[in-house]
Image 1 (cartoon, rainbow, N blue to C red):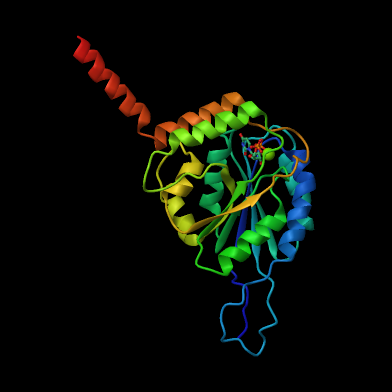
Image 2: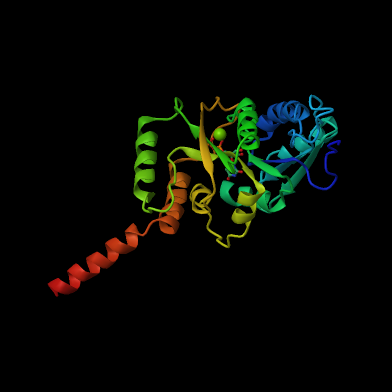
Length: 270
Ligand code: UDP
Ligand code: MG
C-alpha cells in the first residue's frame, strides 16, 4: 500500500507569527524550507511490509501571520515564495493592524489545515531540531501536544526572571490543570488539540493558559532558546504586564476572592 500525501490536508502546518521581523524572516524562512524538505510521512502501521523502509515525503504548509508589520516583511515572504520546496506551501495572512502575538497565533490556528500543527517564532530563537523531536514524540505515542519549555534563560535579567516566576506562581490556582512555568508558544499539537483551541470563544486570549485549560495529554520538552537572529524582542515590561493581566483575570479567581474578602471586612467594620 502506498502512502500518497493527501491532496487536501497537509501533514504539518507551521504557524509563524511575525511583527516587524523582516530581516529575521529573510534568514529564518530558508532554514524552515530546509527543514520541511526533510519531512517524511510517518510509517502508519504494519500493513506495508513490502516497502517499510520507503517513506514518502510529507506535505507541509507554512503560515506566516503578519501582525501588521510596518517593515518590508510581506515583500520578504513574497520574494521567498518561489524558493520553497515542492512539498511545501507558503501562505501569508496579513492582519489589518498590530494585534499582538496571541491574536496572531489565533489567526494562524484558524487557518491551519494540517494533521499536526506547530508554532514557532520568526526570529530563529526556537531551534528546528527541537521541532523535529517534538513531531517524533507525538508520532510515536499517544501524546497530543509537546510544548517547549525554556530550560535556562541566559538573556533575561534577574528582575524579569523573578517577575515571571511570581506570575506563574500567582496564576496556579486550579487543581484541575497546570499552567506550566516557562512553557511558551513553541509547541506541536495534533488536530484534537487544534479543534479544542479553535472552539474557544474568548477574545482576550492568554494562550499559555488556554493550552493547559483544554486538557489533553501534554508533555514538556526542555530547550535552550537561541539568540535572536536580528532585531529585538517586541515584549517590554509594559506589554508583558498587560499580558499578565489578561492571564490573571482569565485564569485566576484570586483577585475576585480578595476583593470580596475586603468587602466583608469593610462591612463588618461599618
Ligand atoms: N510578534 C507578533 N506580534 C507582536 C509581537 C511579536 O506576531 O505584537 C511575534 C514576533 O515577530 C516573533 C514572536 O512573536 O515571531 C515572538 O516575539 P519576540 O521575539 O519579540 O518575543 P520574545 O522572544 O522576546 O518573547
Ligand atoms: Mg524572540
